[in-house]
Structure formats: structure tokens, C-alpha cells
Length: 508
Image (cartoon, rainbow, N blue to C red; front, side):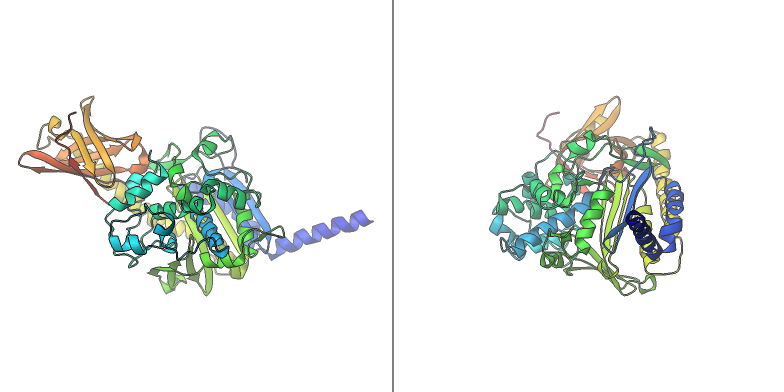
């Protein structure tokens, strides 16, 4: 009898949880995910929903790789990229709470070698400035070098002094991976513990995030990891994993929905997990305070403004505060989101970097819990994105058609070869290989760019790794000699153009 009563109580408890969930989550989510993944050509995804201290959904969809039928599950690893930033910011807020440092400390107090292009910014920059994207860099500025390169963390920090900021110090929001790297590398200076180990022992172990790691070698060796993909010419293309260990505090965590659900339960339970305090609530609140205004939003869409805290974006939405971050790596886009007033957390992970499905599903789930009228957000976004993609593809195809005509450049091919230097990136070399001009990147040995003439001194550059794109680049010629070349890549790598000046004294 006791067993029967116990079983009935479990059933009733389970039903009560199910009945409190929106119809969309109970009845429609699986079909929605499968349909929209097909629309966006997403091979695999994983979703977790945390509500009122319980995991109400945790599931994988699709496959880890297109050449196999291995299913995504709750333990499947994805590179979560910039969702790493919340872990770094929380760590520094915790150290502030423990009085081991202050977020208002000058960076140079802990890192005397830290230097920015602007002398005032070097002197005044605080840890908090690094964590809320207000040091003057344009979004992604210097990531042509930083992302997936062969330099050490300290070398990237030292190189920040060579980056001429687009904005004046503290005047403008500019998303900066190098700043988060710098902030994270203050942790070992304060604690004598590496950033990687600090996260392991303060979060991954106590939160039972058993599959989460911070290094490239762990994801490439894991038998339950998604392969990364992108879309080129409307076709799915396999990418190599990005090695961003050197950007660790900004981008290097690998994780799964099971582990990230635990991270969210801690966030939603005032820093506790399974009854144990992991992080002080005061430290969590530091990360959720507004620091940098990003933009005014469109009230018609339910939002008035968006701000950045410390490692978290925050936006008002129909009167509630949404706290979230997204992450984008080569072949992955992901989101981690929570809403304290609804006691709701959401994780969506995908293994292609050419989709907005991950963000649309997050919004769809939020709308469902807020009892807002249903509309297919994914479908609406897809129409806008596909129109833009169609336009971009048409522009690339026009350049390909010109290149196919074998236009003669202004100078002889051998006049374009040589060594070229940029103060931020360093050196590239251009050589003739198999009758083609080829760009080699000193800090990205895996990457080349094939140059095809478009006429005059313009060339179509097709990068060997699709992440970097297909771009028109230009040589500057003076008095019949090449002076420099302007290199550009996809905006989501770096929005800047970088001028590389020819090194005439270097023999090829």
C-alpha cells in the first residue's frame, strides 16, 4: 500500500509539473524544433528548459555529424564560445565579494605590463571596464589576429597596445574579446590558480558539470561532440574546430545542455545548487547590474533598451528583465538565458554558425511562458536572413564571374608578392603557387587566401576556411610599386579592414 501511495504521489507530482508548462512546451516544441532545424539546415541541436528549480526539458535533436547517424543527446558537447564570459565575470565578481580584489581596481595594479594605445585609457582602465565592453574598441576589433591564432594569452594582451581604438575610452559600447581575456588572466595573478582551474574547482565540479572543459584538445578527443558546420552557396560545409585556448576567458568553454542547466539552476537559486552555496548572491548581482548602454530598442517589439552587465546582456521585454548571452564559434551558435522573475532558464545549442534558429527558439519559449500570442519567430527571421543571404551570394557570384574572365591586373603577378606587415596583426606573405597568388598568415598557419584578379589592383580573396569568407581586397599602388594591401574577412570575425604595408627590405 505504501508503495502504491508513493507511486501515485510521484505520478501526481510529475503531472503537476507537466500541467504548469505552456502548451507549446508540452505539445509542440519537438515538432517545432525538428521543422525549424530543417528550415535552417541545422544538423544537430540540444535544448534545456529550467523552471521553478526543475529541469522540465532536456533533449538532443538531430545528429552530431552529417556523415553518421549518431544522435545528439543531453551530454553532447558544443563549443559555447562567448557564453564563457559569464563564468569569467562571475569569478571576478566573486573575488570582489571576497575582498581579494575590487572590480574598480585599475588593471595595471594587477598587471603592470597592461597597456592600451591611449595613455589615459591605460592609466584609468579598471577590471570592470574590461568586463563591460567600454575600453574604446569597435566590436570584434583585433579579432582578425586574436581568433584561432597561434599566440599565447600574454602575447595577445601585450598586443592590445597596438590597436588604435575606434572610440574614445568609456564613450561607446564595443564588444571586446581581448578585454575579457585580460580580465580572466587577472585571476591567476590574484589567486595563483589558472583561469581554467579556477572555473573547474569553483563551478564545474560543485555544479556537477562533468562534461564541461576549457580546452581544444578535450572537444576534439570527445566521442560525444558535435562537428562544426557552416553554409556556403546554400550547402552545408564541415569546418575544423577553432582552437581558442589562448582566448580562454573570453571564449574557450565546451559544454552540453545537461551541465549548463545546472549552471542556470544555480543562477536562479541565488547562487545555490542542491542546497549548497556555490557563489554568493551578492556576487551574482554584481554581474547583473547595468554598466554599458548598448542601444535603444523598438518598443513595438516589446523592448525599450539593451544594456551590458558583466558577462551578461540584459534587455527589458514586455516589462520583464531578460538576462542572456550568446556564443558564436566556427560552426557553432549557442545561447544561455534566464529570467529571474519567471524563475525560468533556457539553453539552446546548435552546430552550425549559419542559423538564427537558436535565438528564435529562445524567444519562442519565452513568449510561451509569458502567455504571449504565438507567431513563428523562426520563420519570420528566416525570411529576413535568407533575403540578405541571397543578396550577399549574388554579390559574391558577380565577383566570381568577373574573376572567371581572367582579368589582367595593373601590374605583373610577381609585383604583388612579398612580405607585408600590419601593426596589429603582424606579417602576411604573398607568393605565387601553381600560377596563383596566395596569401599566407603568420599567426594562422592553417589559413590561406587565393587571389583572383578583378581588374586594376582589386582581387577576389577566397579563404581556405569558410569562416573567413570570400572578400574583395585591394592593393594600393604608388609610382608603379605596391605600397600596401587591405585585408578584410567576414564581419563576424572582424569588422575592420587591415592595411598591411609591404616590407621592401625582406627578400622572398
